[in-house]
Amino acid sequence: MKILAIDTSGERGSIALVQDAVVVEEVALHAPDGFGQVLFQAIVDLLARHSLAVLDVDCFASAIGPGTFTGVRIGLTAAKGLAESAGKRVAGVSNLKAMAFYGEAHTRAVFADARRKDVYAAVYDSSLRLISPEVVAPLEQWLSSLQLVPDEFLCQDFATYSVVIAAREDDFKDPAALEANYVRRTDAELALKVSP
Image (cartoon, rainbow, N blue to C red):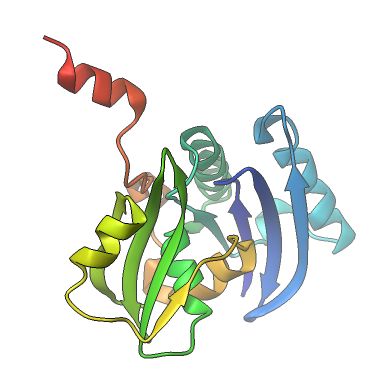
């Protein structure tokens, strides 16, 4: 099975080609002016280096957040669009779940900088099932709210191939069913909520 994974959820992104659970190639992306300007050419180039076309890809995977709102939307839209046009399935994987994949302990607390003095955080078990829900909160507040002390704490940059590896077979679905996982409300939603 060939999977093309896209992660544009952070300041830096990447794409990866995976075949039968082996990472064939991963390409780091840095686009200060936005991933929309470089993503599709990078995908075309990656596939061409391996003599593949979009139709040769069996499934597409995308990081669905949490992360930057625009970045998440670009990657998710690209994966859904490619899957839809090729008649293939797509998987969306939480960046926090992908990070938890790299843990070794039974309970894995994962967190990442959410800016504004907050972190995106959650606790997963070794089967990548949520024990404590994904939230956005100040680190100290989140730690004090935990009902258990996790065996391991992970805080690292997101990696595209972790998105692919963390995607289970039943995660792949029709592109129309895939949604972003922002965790935090957008500024527009917050402003609307407090406006009279």
